[in-house]
Image 1 (tube, helix red, strand yellow):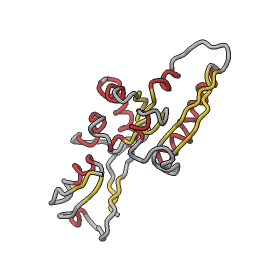
Image 2: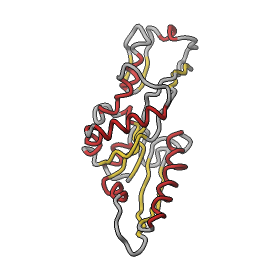
Image 3: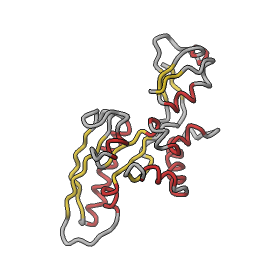
Image 4: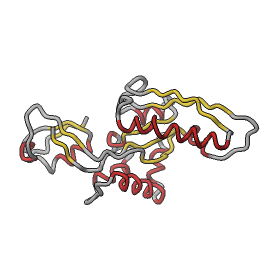
Length: 206
């Protein structure tokens, strides 16, 4: 296994237009309970799912409790119970879930601007800086939000940035030279990066 340290993969929190409307203050005489389905194809032990379930959801509940206008009854569906790892974007678009973590590296065609951290000539090794930078760019350039809007979704925030990337091989790898001439399978963005590692550009997009 070869472990690299590049902060490049940015799963993004996205929600349906209806779910996002909860952020708009409204006057209500009694607490209204909204049912929401949170989806992700990865298991609950995945880092971004843990952050979503263990931090994001409790924080949303806390904020809603401060006003008392709304409460959310969460149904958390992870690990392929509703969608597979690459299926969150489509799942939310089709109404299979109300909110989820879109692993943008799998959606270069639908979300091209999300590949920004994979094509910039330099990047920070601090995952927090990368996440905040992408969110600031999203605020300044409406294209990012527009891409999600075309999928009937709202870009909420960069949920988490993976600051490492792993390569698994059938043969031992001790340095990048061992990859030259080999073949690799992975998301299209990963394939583009891997061409700098290997003499052969052979890479099958997963």
